[in-house]
Structures are given as C-alpha cells and as structure tokens.
Image 1 (tube, rainbow, N blue to C red):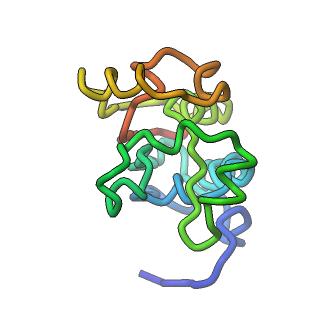
Image 2 (tube, rainbow, N blue to C red):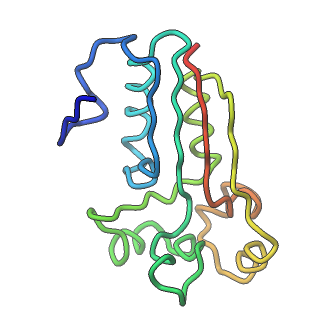
Length: 159
C-alpha cells in the first residue's frame, strides 16, 4: 500500500487501466457534488477492464449522530444557501446528494452496476419525512422512499 496525502482524486497521475479494485467507505458524501463526476471518471480510467469499484456512501445528516434532538433526515429541510451558510463546513462537508443522484452518475460513466443496495427508510422515517418541511430540491428528486434512503452499498464494474 502506498499512502499519498494530500492528493487530488480527480487527477491522480496513476497510469490508466492500472487497478483491479478501488474502494471507498463513507467518503463520497463529504465531497462537493461538483467534484464527484470527475472523481468517478478518474476511477473508471484507473480500473482495468472488468475492474471493480466498491463504494459505501452514507446519506444521513451526520449532525444527528451527535445531536439527538434532530433526526437523520434533518438536513433535507434547508435550501442550499442556508445549509452552506449556517451548517455545512469545509471540515465536515456533507453534499446531501440522494441515492438517485449517485445512480445517475454511475450510469453516465457506463459502469456496470453489479450491486446497488440501499438502507431504505423505515415506517418511522417515512412518518418523520411526511411531517418535515423538506426543501423543494429534494422533493423534486423523487418519492419519500427514495429521498429517505440512509446508506448505499454499491459495486460497479468497468466494462
């Protein structure tokens, strides 16, 4: 293992078709949404033919883990400007992308999706989501069962 920090994952300078496997655990949700397509494109470039990429992506409001007065979907109620001005930070950035956003990015890069497992919202989560005033950005992106997905486990293969 060769550990390189800091490094720009959008441009690694590694040779193309060089890796059999790329893995990321609980990282993508902390990357600005505008950078993710470039990072995924770089992963695709780096993988050998039939190489595998495995990503675990957490889609919950991380503040809910330390503040029990808010639920794990709390961050969905804020418009982008308010979220970025008052709550989001460069230290613990959360992009708030939903499962469908990631799915579209994977498909655009022509990854073959081998597994796309979601931690779907519980009945209690759906009840909370119905009671919340969810920002229109998220309401427009799908039904509550999709908006409320809490985690993704994705396995992709380069064609």
